[in-house]
Length: 496
Image 1 (cartoon, rainbow, N blue to C red):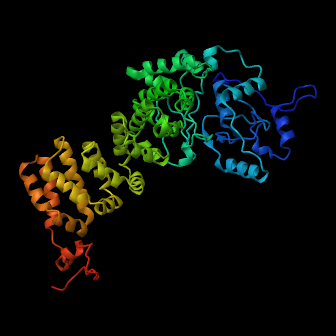
Image 2 (spheres, rainbow, N blue to C red):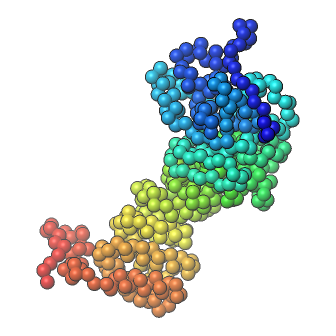
């Protein structure tokens, strides 16, 4: 072939004197397993079947191993496998799982990359010997996405991958959540770190994590180079380690890796967010600082916002606002601000009682600038406005403006912006604002504020002064007197 690759014909027929193959062992255990459930390479029932360009179906790791070794097999039907594109075979995966359930069998477990590579070498002993660095080389012909409904042919090593928001794509235990295989040959530096991270000796793991943390602290190109599938996979279990030094350094190294825009989606797709959430819930104090920082950094990418919310980060982030650590509190607030830019996350936060929590912080003046930013986002949704009007946000914000106790002009502008968002709440907002003396407070701001602030104040005043036909029939006192003790029914309108 012109590409320099070789082809071998695969045959699972062996003489009686040969040791049984994986396929024969499997047939002894599961004699009724349909042949289409078996990977042509490993001979095992597929846990993560994928369809390649030639139309054949393989176990995902078998494809990775074949491409890594430049092995292009010719199958029993005489056709050559084409690994240039890989698409998850969801229909077959579902069929296999149903078959296992029907026969009271455990679902198949995916083989790891190195086991798959070993099987390929056994099938094709003619493969030339390779050096250690070549043994760690990853596929260069295909970029495999973790999405269950998308495929990304390789066009270059720097092509960003799309991120779907289906929860199953981000399960840390799912075999279909592998991140893409980079096209570059892994460096000796990455190999050395990986070997130590997988060591059984705690001191070697600690040494590797500290080294990774230092290497990625300031050098951007190093962050990109070392954000590899193998290192992320190794770090995933270390983030929740029971040893504080491992947990802290793993989380800190991940923060460094996440600083690079190129890495953000890749990290989320690696399945590392659930361990971060676990650490934020109950990790060591310093680890919680880093976990909050990592979630904040990852939430900066628009492709990650919905996924992080779906994975369950919102409850621990809201709880972290009451953390003893100032760093955890502030990074959690910033993460919530960026996550609340997405409507689905706003709805989740409101259901979690975020409005009451945040309003309590506003009243106490705690982290006012960051909390007001989140409130602005919540006020942009119908659900958020309703919850904030119910919780007394209008009166709270106007009282803040009248007292003028802000840590910065930007915070005061955020407060006015939140009121403007609430002004879309219609007549109910107008009633609450009038009762709280909004016009007087806003008129004073219009005289003394910046031009940008004056513009927002003017828009709110226009809403308050706008007349509607139905408004002329409203008795504001009766509308707002929700706690009358006279026992009479509350009439909301009167005839003029």
